[in-house]
Structure formats: structure tokens, C-alpha cells
Amino acid sequence: MPFLSAALSRIKPSPTNSATDRARRLKAEGRDIVPVSSGEPDFPTPDNVLAAASEAMARGRTKYTPVGGIPELREAVVGKFKRENGLDYQATQTIVSTGGKQVVANALLATVDPGDEVIIPAPYWVSYPELVQFCGGTPVALKTDVADGFKVRPEALEAAITPRTKWLILNSPCNPSGAVYSRAELKALAEVLKRHGQVWILTDDIYEHIIYIDQPFATLAEVEPELFERTLTVNGVSKAYAMTGWRIGFAGGPLQLIKAMETIQSQTTSGTCSVSQWAAVEALNGPKDFLPARRKSFEQRRDLVVSMLNQANGLQCPTPDGAFYVYPSCAGVLGKRLPDGRTINTDEEFILALLESEGVAVVHGSAFGCGPNFRISYAASADLLEEACRRIQRFCGNLR
Ligand SMILES: Cc1ncc(COP(=O)(O)O)c(C=O)c1O
Image (tube, rainbow, N blue to C red; front, side, top):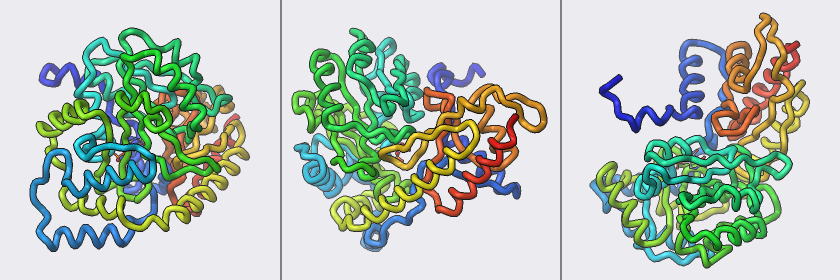
């Protein structure tokens, strides 16, 4: 349609949002749907955070806020980075946005020109390449291997860097693979990056608190201080604090970049929701004692799902170290036939047939740049997960 922009033609709607919307629609039509596609914790937002939001409303904190966030939240972000990550940012080196997604969008919109390349390890969070393309840049997917735990090897990174490389996006723990980079692995990548001063690094740490291995979370700007001046450290409250709907993300980074991101935000959304910002102050400054119990609960559900999926004909499900997704391979079912005679040729055909015949909503791996796989979010009740896996087992068992 001539009315629509060229920029729009370069992007697709988010496949994860689309899968969730499709499941919602089918459910509303009365279909028996088991939705395990959405990347959001099923836990409630903690009570102390709800109380802080109520208090903010009662005190009339319902007006426009400074573009980059209320001073109290920027200070809380400074405190969080210092306490949890050993990173020293000034408040002016932080920004608060409408979710981690807007932080990433701001950074790319502020820096990426046509022809610029952005290296994105695959499988990746679906929004990274789309946002790069929206800016006119070129996403360079760097495929990782299940044998390497879906992590980038330093020599592969070295080979992917060109004079046009502007950014590397690192996401640990990773959505969708659950890969978690150790300090040593980050250090090895840092050695490569130190040789290429034109490359900036966006580390998306939004699943920081959801790690199941006995290893402290590590982030690049702290592991290699030499890279601090060209690293944007992105985080948010959506996942750890079960605050997806509040829409609060934040970042710490070099002043000039943060100022540029603020300029973009000042002309798009302005400061994010005032009440949500006060709630996030409480989330970051308040008690964190609920986190280990929630992590344990995710871990039990992960183990349940991994075990049940590995009993399904043709599926192979590695055990992820972090986040709340499993990313099984469905290579073993491709080429098989459904009871109605149709052949399953791709992971997308697999997930659509699964939805059609068993009502289980998952997301195809090709959406994450690496397949044939699919993603299940296990941030759902154990009953729902069991039901989803039982249906997947039945579905795979009926393929010939
Ligand atoms: C890797 C990753 N980064 C960022 C986000 C965005 O989070 P938010 O809901 O805070 O925008 C998500 C959400 O799914 C994610 O998986």
C-alpha cells in the first residue's frame, strides 16, 4: 500500500506476540487451548510493589515525568547496577523507558544508519533483527550450535566483525535458548571486542535473576572494564519482578549514548508511566527474598518440561541454564505425516499443526533465527505445562 512507509515494509509483527494473540483469539472462540507461548511469569507482582503504586496514585504522582525517568528511579537503577553488578554509573548515565523493548529500540534508532551491521547471535530474541531493519541497518545473524550450549565462540565472533559492524547484541540468559555466559566466556569474547574499537556492545540482562546453575551472573561491562565506555547494559523489572504489564525497562551506558536515547524518547513516548516508575523504585530498592523461591519453582517446571519433551517421539530438548524457556529441536519429526496425510516440512508447519490438532500454542524456532526448533515458555502452572507436554507427546506419537 503506497500510504505505508518503506521502514514498515522492512519489519514483521512480533511472532511471539502473534502466537499469544492467536491463542487468546482461539480461546475466546471456545477452543480448548493450552497457551505456553508467552514470555511472562505467572507469578503476581509482589505486594510491596503494588502498595508503592497505590501510594503513588494516592499522592497524586500521576503527572508527566522527566523524559529519562524520575530521579528516584534513576538513583534506584544506579544502586541496582552497583549492588548487583559491580557497575558504577552516574544517574545521568541511566535511562528509564517503556520496557526493555523500548530501551533497545531507542539505542538502535539513535545509532544505526543504513549499511550498518549489527551482529546478533542466533537463536535470538525476535525484536533485535526487526528493530535493526526498521532503522535501515543489516542484522548479521551469528548462528550458534546446541553443542556449544547455543553460545558464540570467540573465533566465530571475530569472523563476523567487519568495518561496518556497529553493535554486537549479547543476551544472557538468552531468550529463547536459556544459554548463560560464564565470566570466562565473556572474557574470551571481550578479548576479540577489544581489538575492534568500532563495535559497541548491547548486553540484554533482563533474565539476570533467573539462573539455575551454581555460577554468579556476569555482565560484560563489569567483566571487562575496558569495554565499559562502549557497552550499553540493558535490564528491567518485567521478568524478575513479574511486572511485564507495568512497562519499565532501564539501561546504563556512556553519557552521550544515553542522551541520544533520551532525545528519541522525548519525541516518541516521553517519560514512561509515572505510577509504574514509583512501583519500580520499590521493586529495585525493596526486599528480594521472594526471588530464590520463584527461581526454584521455575527450575522444577523446567525439569518437568525437559523430561516430558524428551519422551516425545522425534523431539530433543536440551536443559537450559537460565530464563524460562525450553528450545527443543523438532528435526526428528520433519518429513513425517499427520493423520490427515499432510507432511510436516518445517518447524512453522509443526507448530501450526500442533495448535490445530491439540490446541497447544508454542512459537516456531525459525522466528528466532535458528531451527528447526520451537520455544515453550514454562512460566506457566505445572498443571498447564503437564497438559501441554502430554498433548505434544500424543501429537508426535500420531505422526507417521
Ligand atoms: C531478551 C528480552 N529482552 C527484552 C525483553 C523486553 O522486555 P520488556 O517486557 O521489559 O519490554 C524481552 C521480553 O520478552 C526479552 O525476552
